[in-house]
Amino acid sequence: MTKLLLANQSSARKCRLPFCRSGTYLPTCTLTCFRTARLAGAGTEQDSNYGEDRFAELDLRTDSDIPEVVPPTDRTPEIFKKALSGLSSRWKNWWIRGILTLAMITAFALIIYMGSFMLMLLVMSIQVKCFHEIITIGYRVYRSYELPWFRTLSWYFLLCVNYFFYGETVADYFATFVQRREQLQFLIRYHRFISFTLYLAGFCLFVLSLVKRHYRLQFYMFAWSHVTLLIIVTQSHLVIQNLFEGMIWFLVPISSVVCNDIAAYIFGFFFGRTPLIKLSPKKTWEGFIGGFFSTVVFGFLVATLLAQYQYFVCPVEYNSETNRFVTECEPSELFQFQKYSIPPLLQVVLGRETVNLCPFQMHSIALSTFASLIGPFGGFFASGFKRAFKIKDFADTIPGHGGIMDRCDCQYLMSTFVHVYITSFIRGPNPSKLLKQLLVLQPEQQLNVYKTLKTHLIEKGILQPSWKCRFCLYEHDMLDRSQTVCLKI
Image (tube, rainbow, N blue to C red; front, side, top):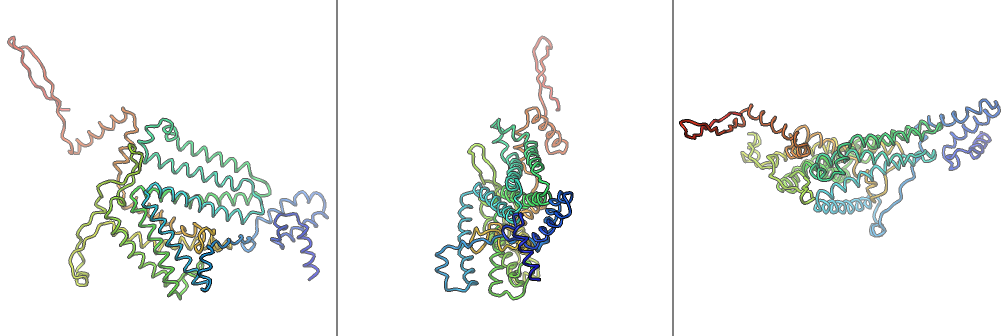
């Protein structure tokens, strides 16, 4: 048995496969080398099929054969290491996470103060970093295969998808700005055709890059890139769409997810005893329940505070005259406080019959409930993904937290829910957006719209029929007299 093992190791060293040189997949490489020797003794006809059998065999590896990604380095600042050197690893991680969490919240508050445009840049930056972290994992897992054009095409597809989504945003919210610039009118008019052409070019390049011995792996990575685009780019686009509805629809959901993460961590750290799910062994029922109640209360209070300021409740619009984003409007009924009757059973407990609330506070309860009950499943999904590839974090960007994707795994699921919630229960026709689209039309088209709308309003009795007066001159008894004739039009 010992002699056989030594023979296997000797054969693996002599193998020319790239992963054998690094000492990876010794059993697989040994089996391949034995097949090589057997095929060599069988004749040249079988030798011609050796390459296909070899790489087909590699494509059929099980999950246990997936290589471990190189663990990320510890980027904890030295000042933290020295200050916390006397603590256990558990408490050291607690302080590092806490300090950096406060730093990130402070930076986020500063960006909010800088305005909606900076928030859009932040969302785009986070999107690119998350995409980079996931694509890097795929590249590291299959790095030994040296797949041609994998990273280049992945970034190219990211560019194409962003061009499509943000081009749609420009066409919807910057119509008056585009109308003044002829070079942009062409891009907007043929935007979807240009987007499709760009994607088609990348698709053709992928087909041309296919290599016979890498077919299956290349299609694996093609699917990897497109699923990543679906999860990352599409959701970040929805985040920006929510922001245009009003900064409050951006801040309340995001802060609710952050609050749930922090509260669940604190409750789980001090009171956690019962495991919640196997995908995340550190998650506990105590943390999950504590996070739920904390998040609902937090969301209600934040909604109460933000609903009082135009800066947060008004839709974000672009002012073509000042070339700036503005948030000025008359707040809708959704953000106006009204008196509501309290159910008789609660009147005894609260000692009052009415309460002043704005409708958005009730909506905030729905948002907070989703953030605390369903939002964590985005984190569980990310945990399963990391376990599948034997990694602890997506990256080491933030000490104690991991990568940017580790902080945003629940946010993307939340952004989709908020967008669906707004379109289903909140948003009606947008007169401002419709007016911008009408201004882009040709004068003849605008006139037809005007006549159609006027006729419709008259038929519904909203407008009274207008009367046009015409003065007719005629001669009677050699005297010029005038007669007024009114025609109904």
